[in-house]
Image (cartoon, rainbow, N blue to C red; front, side, top):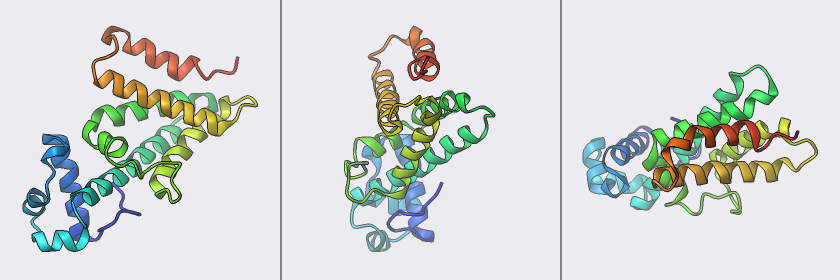
Length: 190
C-alpha cells in the first residue's frame, strides 16, 4: 500500500490508515470510528486527531491509498502482457479483482469521498494514476476515437458492473460472459 499523497502519513498515520482498511474490510465502513482506530492502531486518540481532523479524513486517506493500490494493480496487469491488444483485458481483470476483493475500500473510494474525482480542481495523484492506467489500456483500441472519453466510458462500465454485481442486480450465471464482452468486444475498433 502506498501513502504518497495521503494526509496524516508517517509511522502512526500509516498504521491508522492500514488499521482503518483492515477494520473496514472485516466489519464494514461503519465500524471505522476514531476510538476503535486509536485502540486497534495502538495510538493515543489525541495523536490520531493530530494526524486526521476526523473520521472522514481517515476514510479519505483509505480511499487515496485504495486508488494507489488499484493503480499499482492496473500497472502490474499492463506490464505483464506482451501485446498492446492484451492490455485492456488484463487491466479489466485486475480492476474487477481489486474491486471484488476490497468492497469496503472500493466504497470508500467511490461512495464516501466525492471530492476524489477527475472533475475536481485538485485531483490526488493516485486518482489521476488510476485514470491514466485505464487510458493507457484503451489507447491501442482507440482507432481514431478520443482515448480520454474511452477511458471515462471504460471506467464507468467497470464501476457499474462492480456495483450492480455486488448489489445482486445482474444475473450471476452471465457474469463471465459480461466480463468477456467488456474486456474483449465492446472497445474493439473492428
